[in-house]
Amino acid sequence: MANIVVIEDHPPVLKLLSTLCRSQGHEVMAFDNGRAGLDAIREMNPDVVLVDRRLGDIDGLDVMRDAREASPATRFVMVSACSETRDIVTAIRRGACDYVTKPFQAEEIYSAVDRALTEPANPPPTSRQKLIILCPKKAA
Image (cartoon, rainbow, N blue to C red):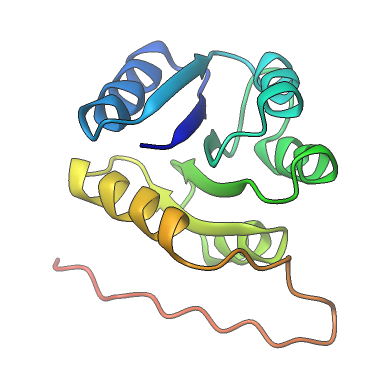
């Protein structure tokens, strides 16, 4: 069982993500804005954070950046409607261990959380490291 923070400004998606994580036996704290979620991360040092890329009050990338200082062992999974390669690369370079695009299947969330909990924590790549992202082909 892990401690998970979910930060999502769209209530139905927030509820769904929270329910999916709880169904796997995790303790979940859910927040509908980035600043409250960031405060919680600083206070509780969760194992995993699921964070929306575009929140109403703060960018999800900024949440990750600011939270890393207070909670360096926390793993981040970016959840976003943006599926542009540029956004995915930016999130990974800034420290996300996974990127799930909306709409998503429950299994995608389960897999992302499992990977975040089992893979060793790595700092974001430095500017001299190469970042390679393999994107599976989606059926048309």
